[in-house]
Image 1 (cartoon, one colour):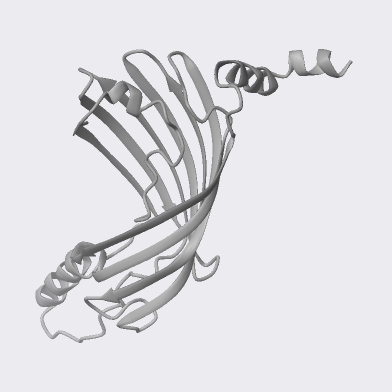
Image 2: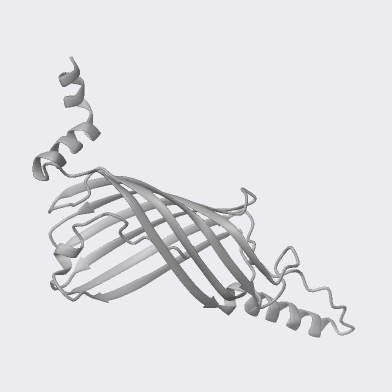
Length: 224
């Protein structure tokens, strides 16, 4: 009866297939260490740096041609922020705790990879939370050259880096409008919902097809 139930469970069947192709393969990568830093005036960051430690589960950690993977990762760690303008709570800098979790799926084909991710990131507390969904297609033109169109949709509950509202009183309404627009562009304004898309061109030293087989911590960014 147990064997029959597993036979009808698509996730169990997928896991059995993965074990058949990669015997003895661990589905849990026990540890991931991430670190990143940036200067981003448009985001009101004079400087931002962070480090995270996390764990990841992959149903199929190393995908060969025409294999699917489902996975989940979580990480947490400190983040130091220094702002160009006072942030939304009136601070010029802050050190906060940050955690993120990703649930993802991917499908590895001979010429292309298709992937989608659902992410949640929290800074300090749940008030400063963002949820995003992204998708990408990676086309291996050669063994070394990869082209990847991508799209990302994000909903932000509240942003810690958003600049505090300008309180200067202007006699001329035109000056007030110009100052407001300038602050929006230079000091950071966070829309509650945003859509981004782009095209990434990447050259891999070595075999790009082999590089895309390993799914563990693939494409994970600590800047989000």
